[in-house]
Image 1 (spheres, one colour):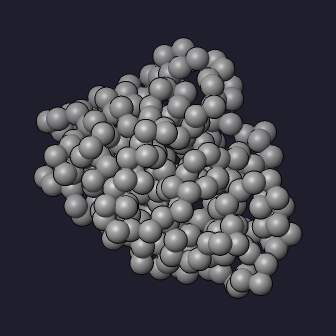
Image 2 (tube, one colour; image 1 turned 90 degrees about the horizontal axis):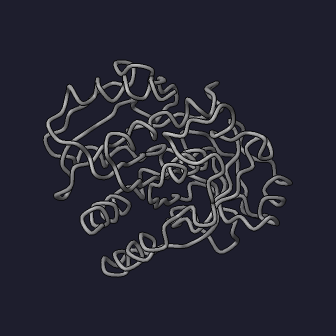
Length: 273
């Protein structure tokens, strides 16, 4: 794995003049932030050695490097999912590449279903913690042969999301007059949306939102010592009495409606870290 990561890094370094400080993962319907990056170098995923290809609507499939609000960044415009048929090691491959390109911070976004009865479609939730329910936790991106160059065999996950970054994001949101929630995200494999009974079960476990990404990426990031901040755009509700039929197109549209607020917060956050 480390050899493949090194080959991807060498290819990317040949395309850029400055190394990134912050990594950004843009989820479903949330790729518009990429247009804010100045002097962008856009590299299609398929051009990068060993990179998977994004197959999901709403994920453009480009790595974009450049300047955002005074900081050098690398942004994934579209991510990879376990349900696409990739292994979790392939899903987190870009996170390993970004870390070894030089990033110190990782900001992630996703569209998710709200489980908390107090949530509404269009809310933005800052992640305080997560629950890994991908195949009931039998799947983990660190499973298999251990490579010491990425991190320890048994990394601690007591603080998956950096408290300092969360506090900064809260201060920024308050300063900009943007409402937000805080909560726990549960990661599942997908690609089906959940049944009413599954929604109730996940809520019982302590989750406030459910989605099909983010958890593997954060596990890999924390394994390598990266500081993480993540948030979910609530695109639908898995709350009794509020459950309606949902499509992927609906999720994309709901995420796009919240995207301008998300963009403002990310731009301010990366300028301050």
